[in-house]
Length: 111
Length: 113
Image 1: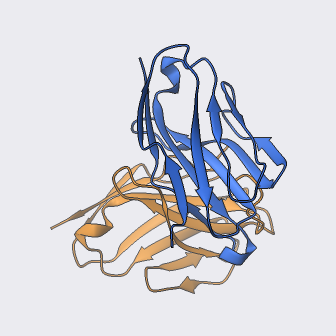
Image 2: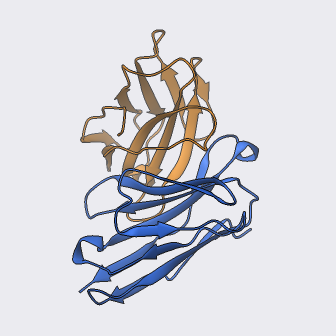
């Protein structure tokens, strides 16, 4: 079963930062936090992952709380192309383990 | 770079028929996965494999079978198709050489009538 909780939907104005929260209160010490997104009915696309430090790449930033029980994905300047379902997943580092998706957050970027 | 390739993209199946969804990856990943996604829902893990010759059940394995005879291929077989198996099926692969992330194919749309 998915071990994360996300709001079902969010809106964001184009050009503004989109902040997507995720609760993972039962996360284990060796589990990473992964974020994926799914645009329309395409296959999910990897965005970013982290263990306990904040991470940033060309797509987004990931902020993980000190107790690791929650995290926030930040899209710094949302565009219409960022409209998608965003999934937060926790999993041990070896991807041979089961990799469970929940229902995610449907983000709509508004012009 | 093909990545993860799934065939067929679309298929209509009659109740009781059987078929195999093919999945091939060219990234030398050890780990492969099959998910299904019903309309408006999240992805559910059907089966996964940690390497050739090794498979294990996910959340919703009933009605499906898999095999992993090579690193590249991970076919999903539907036996005695039922309307409840109407869904979009995604294959994915990953491994330590991919930075512990997984990559998805484009999906196979299956309708059982």
